[in-house]
Length: 525
Image 1 (tube, rainbow, N blue to C red):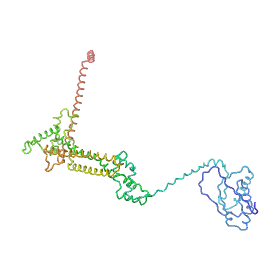
Image 2: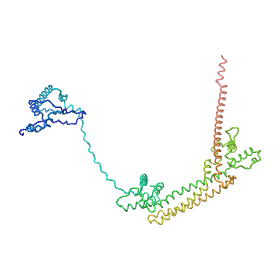
Image 3: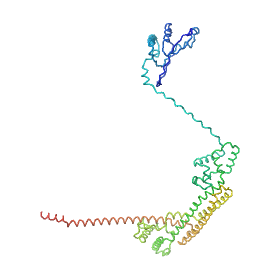
């Protein structure tokens, strides 16, 4: 040990084997000046410090230097009393040292009792306790912190070239993403007429979203100016579309072929519906019987009228007015009477069964036919012929500009389609002309001239539509009445049969064996 130095031993806190649960309090560090100590007390403190513990830390303090040059910081530090939260582990091997520490503590306690204005925390001493029991109760298992996995740093986004307008680029990008489009699928559909992956609707949308000539030129210019910078997804997609051999022309031909039959069928359905309705009006025997009833009733009602009576026929404008002629019963009209007499005279026992049906055309069909116009249908046919010619020109352009790799099956498919389409268009034009001719004959058959000028389908069928609707409704109600009447009659018949059986049973009981025995017993009494 060096001369002029005093070794002061300070007690180290004993680290528990297990981590303790924290006690969340406010730590107080006492920092008030203490009364001056006598020389005797200083020497006792030094001895006390020298005697403490088996677990001590050595600090070398130069006392001679401190005596010659007193330091203010050292004086302040000596006046500080720190309350340390430590748990003291007694060394069982050194019993004498432990007894010495206890004696010194008692001496300090007696000294403090003599002090005045001393805070509580300067007077308190840490009590002894069973450390093992305390640790078992309040310790906690130390959990090893999980090692954080280092996140892989994603490579920085590659800068892409944007050429299109922001809104246009956004629309194209959304379309590509939503439809999961791949340029290979588009090529397969266009080159091979294969819609197994891309259907016609999606292909139509691709055709509509294709880039204009100006956009494609801008994209190509950007690519030439900066070939190392990749294009953004929308720009790249439009560029790939433009690289498909005659994409616009091929797509237009493909879409026209796909929709041609449907457009022609719409016109055919309208023409066929009108022709069928006119044939029913002209050839229906049931309708002729109804007209005969109306003619007879009208002549009877107009018998005394020189202008209207004794007519050989009547104009179709009277048909929707039959329901307006009321009887004494306001709910029963002339049309009700016509329906009742028709069912009674011409349907007989079959009424109310599946063997009969309304004698007038379907009101819904007649109403639709009344909205058709020949000029519209002729215009539609001309539009189809025009589009067919345009498509044929496009196909010829594709065939001329295509290389051998992409020529087939486009050439054979379109050539066969045009031959068949021309035949179908010619047949449908003839069908429409026949319909116009039949309409004129039908109007002449019913001697209908309208209000002058050329008669249209609306002029003719708008009179039939309300008549057929009202007649069909009344007809259905009358059929239901007949069914109810027959059911009621059958129930009454069954009831009458049961009553007859009950009467016969009572008559039989009156002349039976039981009745005779009762009579004998009464006679004896």
